[in-house]
Length: 151
Image (tube, rainbow, N blue to C red):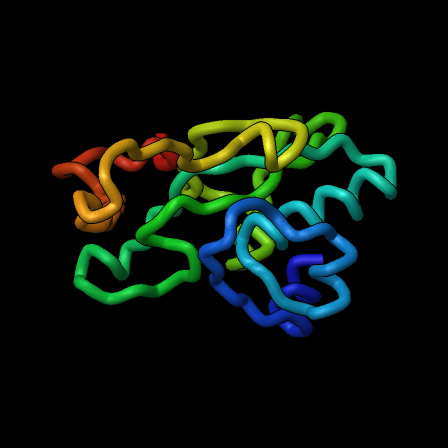
């Protein structure tokens, strides 16, 4: 499934709220990380695998040098977990074809994407008071933290 996303789909960021239906993502063969995760979850569930939606952040070592190396870094990111008997819950990122490692940093896990909204809020005031808003996310390694995988 991960190779199918890489070979047959186009990543298309969008500012609209929510997640496309899996049918829409299949029809247009494009979407965001949330759309890819939701499509893969539904496909896995149809095959009998327990799957859940995950939102959080993606560590990208290239950002430490000022470049972007993987899709979805520098903002909230979404992927999925599938339960495999004997192995437990495993992470899969269809956007970047990541199936293991410590670069996916979960913040929320839910059955449905609508239960894991990355950002929500309101603004009250006069229309001419609003000056705009920007959000920057930086996920970086801190200091000289030992790699726990080597233990």
